[in-house]
Image (tube, rainbow, N blue to C red; front, top):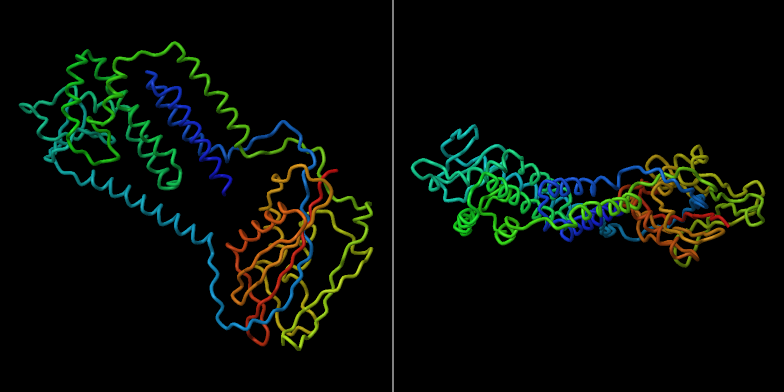
Length: 456
């Protein structure tokens, strides 16, 4: 999820910067509108686009997940403190802020719908003549005009043409689209700049539409200046007195630069770079798949875990210890976890003979836990590693079934951090059935070895 958000933020940010650097001052208003809409859509869908890479993947590491080891730890605390779950906290915060923007959006729509006035049809255009002293504005298919703008029951044709342009070209749809994205991704600062750029470009288009009908430029500019101070508080509308007056006046008299065409084509390499780096990669073919070599001496024999339960009188707690024995029959398995799905489906390991309770249970069994680790582990972060890398995940499964005190120990710090990240991600979304003894939930220590084999 973090990667998807990062790609969206970077893509939308780069594309809006490109617009301000190369296209904002050009009189290619229709092209600019298409650019703003299409690049914003592109930024949001590019992380989901599958891309068949023409390059071979060499030496993709293979993640191997060993057997779980459990250590009994009787709890001396009857009501353990609830651990702060930061992922859930952030999710709640995201939903609260999204709800705020949703309510704000709905409120803005209702404010427009509740406006009362005289309905008119002027030159086949729906209009609502209102009593409030608002500057002229339009929304969807309707032009809203304060009664004070009627002179002898007539409407200034320049104002009408300006707002009509917004209606016939459906500029409100662009703004509604950005507002929808703000509800879902309010954390994206590029949306603010996209909305402002869209609204400014809409005004350029409307001004151009008026002047193409042979109205005097200076008189039209004077009309705009008169309306600057009139209040307008509808953020979903296209208003006649949009306050970017200086830019509007400049664009009314400016001309395209001789590099306009080149600037348009400059977009292509930007899109190509984003497409190559930010799409969802699907390797065309794999040259090697870095599986453990069963014939190598370091993999001929592996440790097999057995259980031994010993009472420690000094601390008055029982610990399940594990002794290791070496067996040729227990050679290190080099396939993915799918080949082990038939084993230990109900519990991590068999209960030791002296332990009378019930071991902790992961939803759908320990192999479901292994599968989640396998599917969420990002092997692409490893660059230049060779041979075998190992780490061991340690965590407590408390009386409530939550995984706490998650830590990974091994010689490769990058491997450790990625293992911790994945297990913390799983722990935020899944609750174990805690271990029980004598009908009471007890804490258990959980240990899981991980091994990665890299191409040599």
